Image (cartoon, rainbow, N blue to C red; front, top):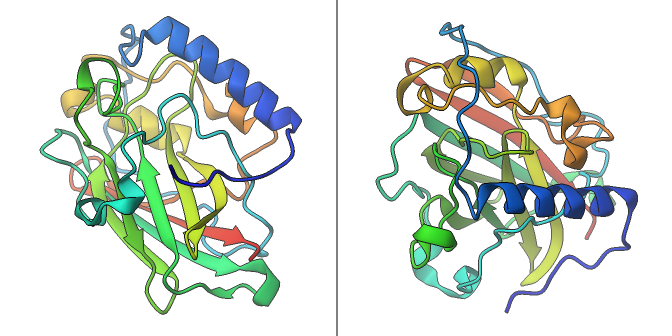
Length: 241
């Protein structure tokens, strides 16, 4: 069992737990109803937090679908490509980890774990995907505190804005559990294309998501690319160690 992020229960955690519970009840471990289709198919580039003022990255609930196979102890799961053949728009995650207690200097050899749902809103390890490990994985940061993952643009499930879960470990200890948010305008473009189009746009906007109720200043991905070639999502994770 991996060690969990030890932190006080806050209003954010209460909202997160309530939202996740409602979402899980509605989706039955992953499946989601179809929502109205998006209309835009143009490419989009947006700004987000890549360095900012180096304020602490907010802690978020790990949600109802955390890893339960002990991936952190399995070398197989330390991988850059986590797709395992899942269809979807290519997405590169360019993440960096810095230490707030050391002038926001990079943290080398930190372990970053990611997990997110597929285009249909399903997570591996749960429901009909028990025993599968798609769209999950870990990487160790380089000397510049950077890790890169190759994945697909996440889908959505009822009650949540589009997101990717992130957890940072330093010396084997969990120091941050958080979530990456995605710009609504990019979601609208992506969900009108390819394998996403049948389900349509995510009906939950980021501003209406209880997990992100106090804003996404240090959780919003900076996006570059297009819905025709794929995107890169960049985010800096500011932790105190």
